[in-house]
Length: 65
Image 1 (tube, rainbow, N blue to C red):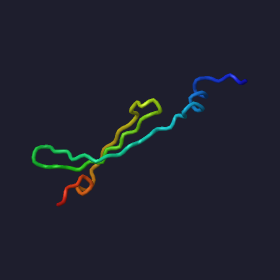
Image 2 (cartoon, rainbow, N blue to C red):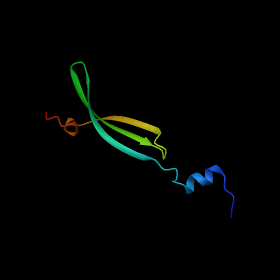
Image 3 (spheres, rainbow, N blue to C red):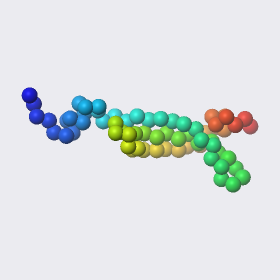
Image 4 (cartoon, helix red, strand yellow):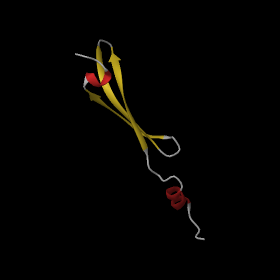
């Protein structure tokens, strides 16, 4: 049997890939409302590794102009 270091074991047991989820939020700042697409990525342990936000069309948040 071959001995492994931590990095090699991490690739074998569950890998090191991320799981990303995207959702839409309506953000209000005073009088204006903006629809944001928020993408959050977690590692195999559930720890957040990145989170991004960008403006998208209001229809994504269920708002009809």
